Image 1 (tube, rainbow, N blue to C red):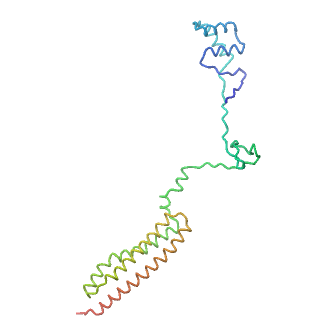
Image 2: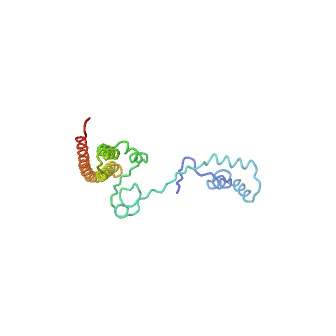
Image 3: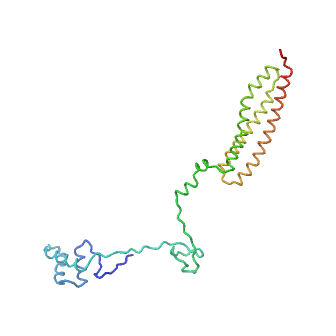
Amino acid sequence: MIRITEKPKVVINITESFLDTIDILLNLQVGDLSRLEHVKRMILENKPLYTSDKKYVKNLAETYIKDHQIEEIKSPKLINCRNCSTSIAEDAKFCTLCGTRQERTFQNYDVKKIVKRYNPLKLISRPNSYQSLAIVGGLMAMIPTLFIVARMEPLLEAINYETGIELSGLASVFISLGIISSILSFIAIIITFLIKNPKKVGRMLFFIAFGILVTSILIGIVGFGIILISSNIAYKKRHY
């Protein structure tokens, strides 16, 4: 849909067709109408035009008409009424059908800010307080246990060599408890980044903490037994 704006001069669109320009001049009733009719007839009959006739029509067009200014009326963006779902203009304050007041707030979302806010690398690089505590606590429980488990086999071989006592069963229990404790410590660290609900993370960390506590106590008991055996061996060993 277009609207033609009128100015002091008649504002009309001049097309590329010379015949259309002549029709416009005839409708405006300007110039020598008989000459314009003659020029129009010559065009319709596909007869050649004199240069003077072309120049005459051009001068009339420059004097009385010019290109129109087109203001395109865009169709308004439609939305649905929040009460009756009738289609109404986006900027309408009231529904045209039910009269309900339209109270809407339109927000422009910045995609770059959204991506930056939910960037997983940013979450990892700047952990929350509970994430930091879970990392420290998990590593404190995991690293010593893994170190002792790794050194367990040479220690048991030395005890077996000195005393002939077979402690493989006790060592298996110790290693199993160490692996369980390490797995729980690793889970305690990783869930703080995978699960976004802090309350759910808190509940899981609570039970994991007790699991690590139980395995640590059992590891301590096994370690106590091994150390007790070692002290007995040292006590009986002769000093030369």
